[in-house]
Length: 281
Image (cartoon, rainbow, N blue to C red):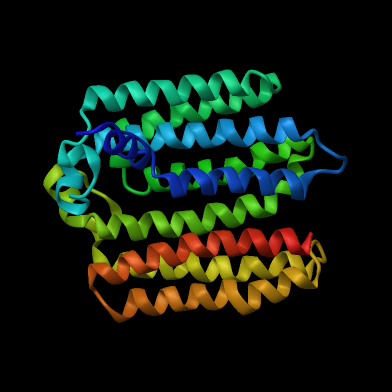
């Protein structure tokens, strides 16, 4: 493999879109939480540290997911042999070390959050993801924690609670959708997820309950006058209709490609929700 393809593989295994989304999340969390002007270098270091942790987390997840990915995601680099486990672990350690170095330039509390996130992500990939719903909840909590982390950067973590809850719910839904996608691979790997134990129908009902809860929750910040009319317009025109559409895709078909569409729609809705919150703040 030539150098350019190798570099592309190294970048691809980090799932760069997820890494960029994390960076975007932290930046937005800082901006909507700030009460005073924040030094741009602090924003850069904080968001970069979070992005590096995400990159490392995605790599270690692929390392421990090889057997499942042989069925569910055969295009991934480790499955195809484009990168070895040893190389992946080296990359994982590099990203985490860089995250620690970068976050050490911030406060001790932010460094502790970064260290906890690294440990939890490793524990998730190694053990927690095999426990029904526990792994899903852990990842959703870490996504919400990214907002609280951004709130601490700005010195106003309370202002990050509403978007953190939104992020938690939408990512919990997405995690269960991903588990439905991975049923065949997880079954062969001996991982008993919620969809494997309780089936596709009950999993869809659980997603329905969480989605309805999320839709109702999106109304709370406007009703309580926490956010302005701009937030309400974006939520009602884009966010909630897209949530309803994702449910339609989920319930209308059992095809795997539809599940992929639902997963991408939920990721897009995360971005739209952030835009709504930013505009409404």
